[in-house]
Length: 141
Image 1: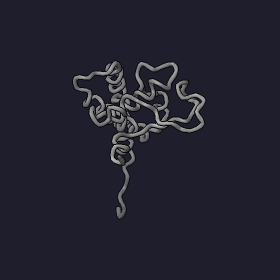
Image 2: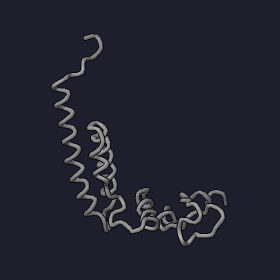
Image 3: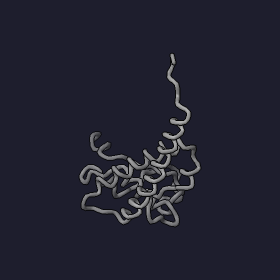
């Protein structure tokens, strides 16, 4: 039935990247628990990402959403502030959907959120200071 064909997302992996799929000449969809449960459990996209990281990353990270703070801190202030704001929004969304099914990395997510908040608000303070010192003039002034 055509309708059943698209009841859940498919995740494809190039052949040979996982031992389970080694030796296959073509791309094959992965059989993931999160995509299999998509309709009944209402899996979230980040759950699919977490499962993909768990089966592909070696060594397996304790937190599949670990923030690379060195990279964030190397961004220009405006870009870092936008990046940290977006990351905070995503992590907040993830944690708000956890409910009773806590993940093993919730503590790490909260720790990263605290550090991201510090970087974010420091960036906002820097931007506000810069604007106070050299205000942007609007056209016609």
